[in-house]
Image 1 (tube, protein in one colour):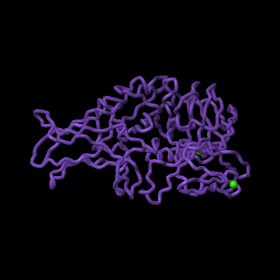
Image 2: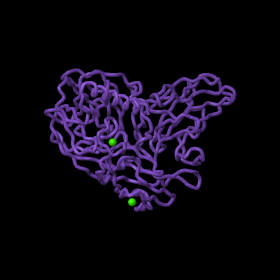
Image 3: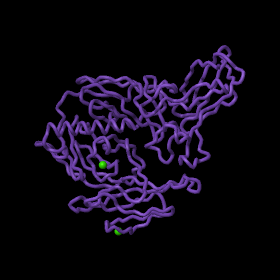
Image 4: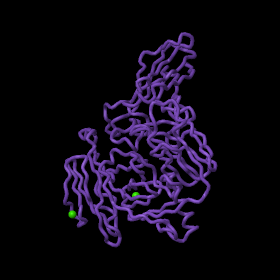
Length: 446
Ligand SMILES: [Ca+2]
Ligand SMILES: [Ca+2]
């Protein structure tokens, strides 16, 4: 996703800046830093947490985790079970025959120091392996985190990119206190007592920090979140070189350095996320609180590209066959942010993709979250002239070429002899989150 690559670029830029300005690496504490010892912990209830990029990796022939001077821990994947080498002797020794199991593997740093690293491994039971050839429907993700107390707050740093290190800014996640959601670990953060600049040892053994000394202001993302039956779980904003999670567990405004910000993204639940879209940038000025106005009333988004990786949706009438086509819409907030189906958060119940392997992937909503009512209205009477109105993705007919469980086909309606101006009206009355959303636009049937 584009914002992920932007985050990576921004992270790289930041490291370059740090490297240029400071001969020490970013992992080493500065003089006067407070140093906190961190301890390893297994996130047994990781499924209850929201973090921006908790990677689910396909399990194929090895785990991409550090193993001495190389990477990769041996495993043997079959349709029925997975075997792991949990003691780093190169031979598999532990068999997992069902999904949803915690496995402790051993990882090792270059000096040969070993430690246990917990992962969750599971099989994607929804895929019909009789139909889908060459698919190894096993996945793994990390359950490994380090924990400690910083500024009086208990924190967890989760190795979300599952690479054995805990200092990956804009990739690993930090969860504060009893919150069940977190944001990226970033070099500047607020944990409750003002902004700090933080560094973390790559192996997660310690963190060091000192107060941020630049001018700060606050961002409030809750009090002006309008006309919605739901609340965001996580919300991130972006400034020049990194992102900030600005939804505090206590709901209070979150401190950030002064500057110009954009809405980076948010999470509503496991199947709905938010992109900044056309949401305007906003300023945070010193010692003041900027209230971010977003949310409803909601409408649909067809024609604009909601983000660089979300190409323009197809929506047109085919004059040759007299057929009206319409793709499933995204939802749009009043101020331009875009609500889309989540790909990263909701596997295996993932969002709709095109059944056409040549088509760009689009993250529409799973049918459980949004089905659409598509009406073509007579301009004067406002009576619908089309019969079939229900529109959503489908779960049926898994394609051999495209092993996904949800896919979309365009809504089609043959308008035959009808000509002239009509009103396209799209609603999603059965959607709990977006039942008030309305889209209307005049269309020409040619
Ligand atoms: Ca072994
Ligand atoms: Ca990591």
